[in-house]
Every structure is written in structure tokens, then in C-alpha cells.
Length: 142
Image 1: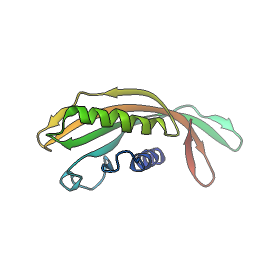
Image 2 (image 1 turned 120 degrees about the horizontal axis):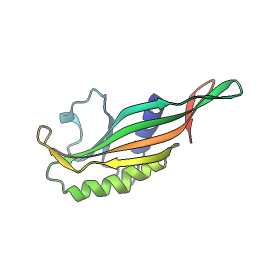
Image 3 (image 1 turned 60 degrees about the vertical axis):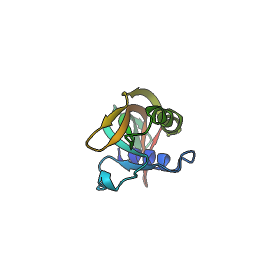
Image 4 (image 1 turned 90 degrees about the vertical axis):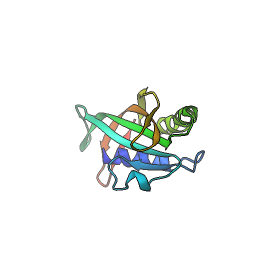
């Protein structure tokens, strides 16, 4: 799960069309007040399911399903259309470029978080792939 989370974080950070946003994992130690005052993305792992492995040489190959929540946070005065455009024109294509199959996307309605004074747009993504253990590293491939 950590390898997959790191891969997604790196893909999002390397995105060039919108270089002004920041990406954080949900369990970081950075307070929201220290994060970008413009636009930032939070990637949260929700579920990881490893399915029955099947043999392949010295090790096994195991299909997996992983669910992540991605939240885009922007100043409360940001038009909701801007968040929707960013979400679907930047984040979804990045997830499609991951080394997994994006099998499901479900998005919530934009909402204002009064405590954080941010407009928040979140979606849940289900990725499917195959976990292939390697002697030196571990890799997820479709």
C-alpha cells in the first residue's frame, strides 16, 4: 500500500499543467494552516484488498484493489467550477496514467468547510492492479 501511495503522490507532484498546487498525504504532520493558501490536494488511502495470489516462479502474483480519497482544497471564495475543472482535467488523467487500472470514480458535491475556511471537492477512486514481489523491490502493475 505504501508503494502505491508513494507512486500516486509522485505522479501528482510531477504534474506540469498546474504547477502551483501542492500535494500531501492525509497522515502528514503539516498543519492545514501551513499548507498552501491557494490550492492543495490531499491523498488519503481508504482501503487495500489483496486477493488470492497465484504462483509465478519463485514467488506469487496477487491481484489487488485499492481505494483512495482525493480532496482538493481551495480558498472558500474560489468558484466551484474551478475546482471541478481542476479535478477532472488534472487529477483524473494523472490517476489514469498510474501503473494500475482505474476501475471506479465517485465524486462528492463541492462543499465549504467553515472550520478550515476552504472549499473542498473530494472523490473516491478505486484502482486495480497486480502486486508482483521482486527480490529488491515491490511493484504494482496492471
